[in-house]
Length: 237
Image (cartoon, rainbow, N blue to C red; front, side, top):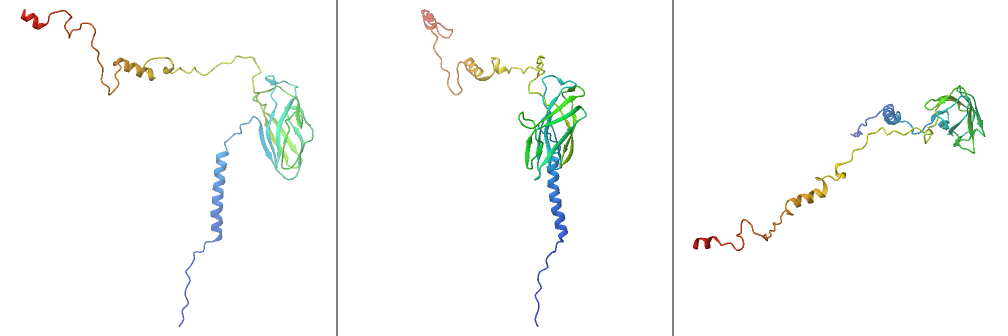
C-alpha cells in the first residue's frame, strides 16, 4: 500500500492586500513630505505660480527710485518663465486692471525644457505702461498671464524692495545698547589679575610651599635692643 506525502500548507495572501499595504506606505511618505513643505515660504520678493508645464518664477516690478510709482508712470516687470514640457509654448499676453497695458518686447517663445529670463537688459522685456493709481511698496498688482498652450495664470505682483533706502531719513537704533561685561571694565575680582592679587595678599605663599621669614634689621619686641643689659645681668647686679 502506497502513501502520498502531503506537502506543507502555505499561507496565501490575497494580491489586493499586498497592493493596499504598498499604497498606504507610499501615501504615508508623500503626506510627510507635503506636511513639511506646506508652510515654507520662498526667500524671494516676487510671485510664483504654475499652469500646465509652465512656471512663472519670481515675478515682481522693478524697484523705483521714489517711494512709489505715480499715476501714469511705467515699470518693468521682471520674471523668469520655465517650460518643463517637451513642446514649445508662447507668452501671448499679460493683462492687469492696475495699468493701461502691458507690453512684451522681444520673442516670447518658451522653448521646451528651458528657463527664459524676461528681466535682462538686453533680452526679452515686459513693460507695464500707464498706472491707473499710485503704486506703493507693499501693495500687490493683480496680473493675468496668457500662454498659447498652457492656458492662463493669475498672480499678485509686488514691487521689489530696493537694496538701499533712497530717502535721507536718519537711521534710528531701536535695540538697547549691549552692556559692557565687567571683565572688560578693568574691575578687580575677576581673571588672572585677581588671582595674582590674592597670592600677593597672602605674602606670595603658594599652596604647598613653606613661608620664608627674614630676620628684622631693627629691634623688635621679641629680641632685646642692642646695648641693653640682659635679664640675667640685671638680676646679678
